[in-house]
Amino acid sequence: MMKLASLFSGGKDSTYAIYLAQKQGHDVSCLLSVFAKSDESHLLHHPNLDWTQLQSASMAIPQLTLDSDSDNTEDELLVLEQLLLQAKEKFKIEGIVHGGIKSVFQKEKFESLCVKLNLVAVAPLWDTDPEQYMNDLIENDFNFIMTTVSSDGLDDKWLGCLITKSEIDILKQLSEKFGFNLNFEGGESETFVLDCPLFSNPIKINQSEIFWDGYRGRFEIVDAGLDYNA
Image (cartoon, rainbow, N blue to C red):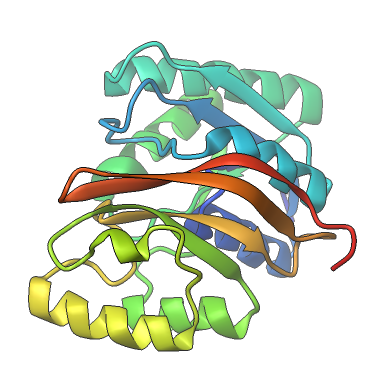
């Protein structure tokens, strides 16, 4: 068992990675979130990051955050390194857990940083089968919505859509037709977790906006809170 920091975006992958790490016996002591400058980042995910504070509260896992003023991967890694040093000092972490699935670029960058800081990198989702993984999310009571789309075959109707088994079946057909990754590993969509077994209370979205340019779009949370009546 190790004390781990989670590289946390609020989406399905980073949240499910925490879930699996805990099932493996690890103690996820803190969440680390870098607020990327824009959606051009190849390393970090940013949609609706402000609302990860609600997920942090619901999981009772403290969160450390820093802003990245650059889209440059090396600059983002320097910011992440600062966060990891804070986590080492404050929470005595021994490693990190991240939700990488297929991105060798991302995995190698995180592992190199861990070597530099004498930490262990844990990637419980690595190389999982996309369809099996998506169904595992549903079977383990993960409720999540799609917050961005950026792919042929995904239109504005998916923005804010809660994903259930039936949606996965439709997405599977679309992924086969249009060639995108069913698990969105290629950035075809970002997600946000509203509820899961880690949460004491689900997140309720009170107000939102949808932005759509005919190909790309995002679902932006304007107001949300923890639902204490659920």
